[in-house]
Image (cartoon, rainbow, N blue to C red):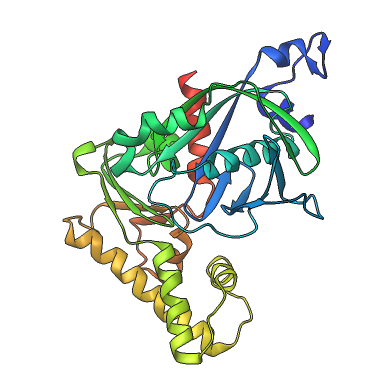
Length: 322
């Protein structure tokens, strides 16, 4: 496919079972961000819902078949879990992400892959090994069907990195002086202090303020004030596309809640001793658009608003280690 050839270089050799001999030997690096709301890979973003079905569904769209069981993937958001390792949901979401990357031509079916994944700064040291083991199952290759196509991938390795760091990994060499990388995620806020391009581990912090909490707050206030919840899909659409044409009473409520959220985030930085006037601040993650739309603007503040930035960073870092 033109997609993966342009990304990794064209493979040439003897055809064996649908893959060139050189393609069979090649390792493909795939970055996946296992979010508490959205799954992100280099080319795809989808909700993290996993619904087990008792029977074969009518439509093949979003349907995963693994070990004889039918699942609908990404048609809603799963509730936040205390641990992503509590069940097989994030493993199944990983398979769907691989299938989607294959659909877009980034990797060939049958590929040998190394997964680049991430964890919040606070949990990285304690959860990393278990998360790697969770994703790298003993049975290889892994075979499944997604949207009526049979897939097979060999997960050669899983490399885990701190989120937030990954989002700016390719820019660290240009960071002279003091930087704060603030990852405003769906369930946590990670703050990474960087000095002259080097993360200062003792000053890395994770807080539980989150985009999910402000979305729930908006739904609750809407129900209380108007007797009707603003659907979560509408709130997310409004955050992503601020020019959406929704009734003013609802947009005003959303604006007020999002402005208050931004003030809380900025307050967290100040309360924890971060100088927001002199340090360079880079907001990343799903909440970066909110910070850009409602936050304080100055020359020392910038934004990485691509929600796939961590996934792209995991892939970049995994390739650097090879």
